[in-house]
Length: 537
Image (cartoon, rainbow, N blue to C red; front, side, top):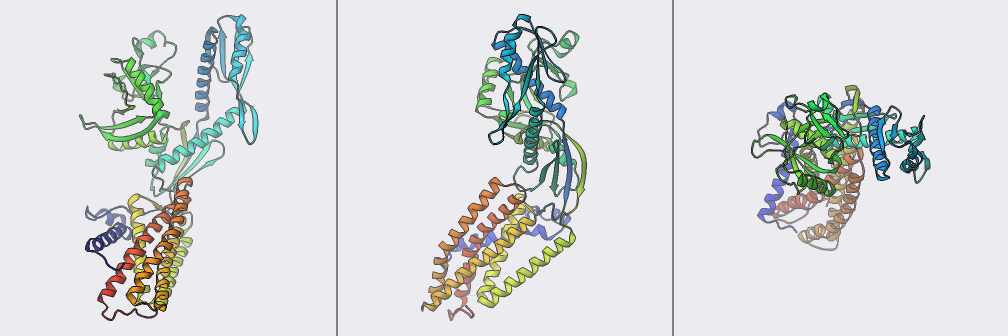
């Protein structure tokens, strides 16, 4: 256990040096960190809202747009239901209150009424039970007219569901890695509060959140242009969409998309191999790949449109069937906009546009006094631990403190590298890690004392202390690591921050206790001619 080959010593020293190097930018200002050599890491540890403050946005959902989209979906369901039942109609219009259906044959009113009632579904859940129906179907003011109206209870439930989906979508956009620790909560029925640490202004945050990022793929009308449709009449089932580039003009597209953004499983920024322009590579799930493959196979030689938030990004011609379920989106992208759009597409589309009703930057939520008190608590606690270890174990206690310092450098350096945010719960995780690291060394040293009392030589006692304490420390830390992984997986915000610090601390503790401390002891033993362990150990 006390023998180290040369490559092991080099590996340990390099690991410790990299941890120290990654931690170094945190001890200087941002300006100094930016001026460091290229081979030195430049990332600094981000502080959370409770320690530093950040950007504050209050968003409001556009419920009118949500209702409009819902009415469009109900209209499509009504059209399909009547067509499946072979009931003719002259028109299905969307009004402010619902859907108005004019039947081709007024004598089929009762039959159509019975068919449309099949669209009615109860709302509620298994715990609270049914709280009403989603739709009301009524006969109109004359024969051959039917009205389908969403209920107020169903609309309220839809707004609630949309708000929950919007919160999660915003969280995925702002915290794509899971280490930023934003504060994203609902305020009332239609508003969402977003607070993100480390942002000095809200411009970048607004760009990331503000876009709905609803991506769809549409069939282009094979014969009629948008200008011809405006001059005559837009065909039923088609809609005119503006182009993202005004020079390309408007395009007449089929209203129902071939594939929707919900079928995307991944979107990554990249560069076109031929033009070297920024693009976005996307990949569909199995269902989307099948629909996209069938469409491209049946429409070779025809254009199709890629639409983002009702604007056509591009309308390429299908040269050959695209059966692999992947492709790329090109347009007037910069590297930054391509990266932002890829994040938005990966996180999913917002269920409804969000309007910014308030924006500002906020200061630390804890206040300067609380932060100062926390710093003093950390200093006093560290001094107390250091004093105890040196009094209890002498020189070996100093070795343990060096190991704990390396432990902290590895944790902070790793958190800086991965862009993790340090909050008060994260500091609690660091303190807990220090305690666990000290505890690991205490277990080893107490085992060495026990072996010395049993009459073993110093070298044999040290060998036995490290080897026999290893399994105990590994088992205890492994169970804590599992708990940390579960907290990161299921938790959010401060819970994730605590889980990140705790998990990194456990890995660093096991490494330092059985490599750094052991290496220090081995070097000391090799240089100690008397081979005696100093008191009080």
